[in-house]
Image (cartoon, helix red, strand yellow):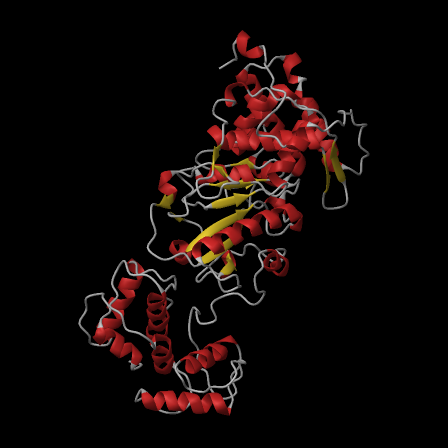
Length: 516
């Protein structure tokens, strides 16, 4: 709907709560850029699109920078199925790709992969939002009048839309210089900004995070997480969004996404937004959702520019807070990447994430990821074997009082002797090799509490590991006795001729600890 005459008479605040103070006091004046040389295709693309659709060039570049750091990622989609520098999306809640195709006449495939076409499409979509808001020619020349159109470009609502637009206007206020692949530089000079928040102002008031005082609160859609937890929190999972900060927060609000995270951190300044309460189970890391807090970091795994010092320090402060609250050990067994979670198919945070620096910032212990005992399968270990599974055998034997020596990952005579002693005590064939039966007995060794659906804790993890070894199929190790664990217990009970009830009592523990 076009804006009313009253709405066109803008009252601009001199202090904008959602923009940083440094952004507001930036004194650099806007400049009219000279025509870029022919060797600067990205600058030419922004200039052409701005001229064709009457969108301020610097605004267009700031939107693109906020979405992608001006990296088209070779036409690969974001987590929200968005493409290119301008993140033209195609998902149930955001059809900006299809809209750009209709407005420009460019085919969707070209808009996905061709950067110049993608930028043209982004400009067309922005102009369409401006027209629907009723911006006239004079207003379109004023970058501040575009704030509601930028908010609409996000296809988010309420605070998420305001987060998006505020980020773009912060880039305008602070200015930016981005070096893109090939060495070309795209510049946006700093300028004072006083955006006309218009229809966004009332909806854009942020609440404070209920669990982390220095964060904001923009809740996820209720169908994208589970209220409550079925396991004790003992891990922090580090993610990369594969998208922008505000765009990812908006994605959690999308009923079609079926994903969420507890916290998301902005690249440029480390701002933190919470979207799921810590007491609830966010959907971010599969089998370990119930026992972890998920922290998403704005960016893409293939571009190290997103991992700024401000982001590292803000994230580290949050992780320190979580570690203190939940007594989480600050080591790489409990502070892990999404790619390191059991059964993970994702690669984030990827090779550009500096784990040593991050662990130093949280005051933790660097080292290798994982809990050193959990594997998707357990292979035969014997004299001459080496590697992390041998280390696990040695740790398990030593914990049970069988002297396997230093857990160095080398299966030598001492480890073999300890294995044979353990096997004799369990009435197993004392061949000194760790196959399925010995693995099952080792992994299940310990206390034998009654377990059933709803149980949680370390005993459940022991059960899940030993079932993985006994059945030869991966059982997720998250310390939560849910439906999948119950199914595995029933399968084990059936195959071993035990009473089948899906619960773990003396008979089932006894069979596991005997290596059956």
